[in-house]
Length: 477
Image (cartoon, rainbow, N blue to C red; front, side):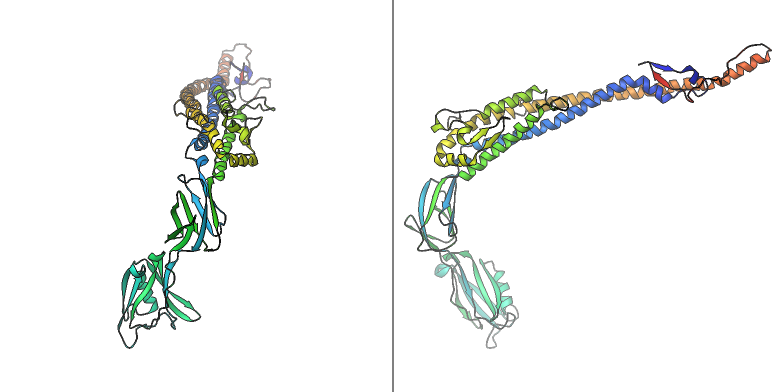
């Protein structure tokens, strides 16, 4: 780009606009710098999108791995109670499908002993002027351990101080003072249920306390498929292989049915997670290849052939089918339909009916021992796509980083060169400007000298009749 000047404007002593001249001269290289910076912005935008898509791909892989896991949610079992307000059950992977009949005669209870009420909890319980007393507490029934509770005046001879003393011993019991309209009582509770938590007072010497007969401290009693079961806890494991039973209410005359079978809820949750992750990735990829009608352009990654290959691979995986398998051969046969834009929609009613009717075939569609199921195939493909060195998005991200580093180096080099050139040009044109600004004085001096010689010469005044700008300016030519 050339630079031209208005001669009349720069010969009147105003000189030139140095900054404008230098800027005009450096315009080509400044434009090149702007181009590099725009490329960096584009690469940064693309890097953000690629990272987001890589995260989408990782989420899809996690969801698909759950469906291909032979011990995962498709293989999980649930235990359902016909009377969940009385009994609940949970099955693990070692359980076997089946139906069990349970009758709960009684629940496991923790042992408790308590006293008749006294006036308050802060009056000495020692009697007859005694300064000491003693209580024997048996824990665990007749075959349990008896703990000695020595009572000393001024130390633990009130209900309040006695409760604190018992709590400090670590015997597996807790003591408290219970206050009501009748007064204050000492209550001792076992921290264990069943016969191991049975409590009894076997000796009470020199105190005013009157202990009531102990309560609780009994095992749960129930039958499972007619077999009598006794349990120290209301949570029972081992009575049914792989099933944990939780008792909440005793009902001796009620038969409760517990059914162990494939867990439709976990299967539906896992499939929903897969469809959600798949739709997120496909939907985001679609935005790059959709033409904006206002700009007639695709997204920032619309020209990325690797991204198009990924999209095609995902669509191929989603339409994968198996043979036979009781008619459950593709996603549509399960109730998962492919939409026109490549996303998936779940028909939950059909999905649940299909799973309930044939849970084994349902699981076999996704996974099998020969590793040829839908999830087996999809997981293997995703393992390649997410490989840290050869995965399509990871390769794109690596190439993007390399390009950004190269542009950063080019930008820095060009910026340094522009800085140097600007300084040199500014200095050069400052000298030119000084000469131009001195021109009117020099002309006047020459004119005066010639006049002094008595010559008859016509000279051009520094101030002529042309209308010119007050300051000389550089114009592109």
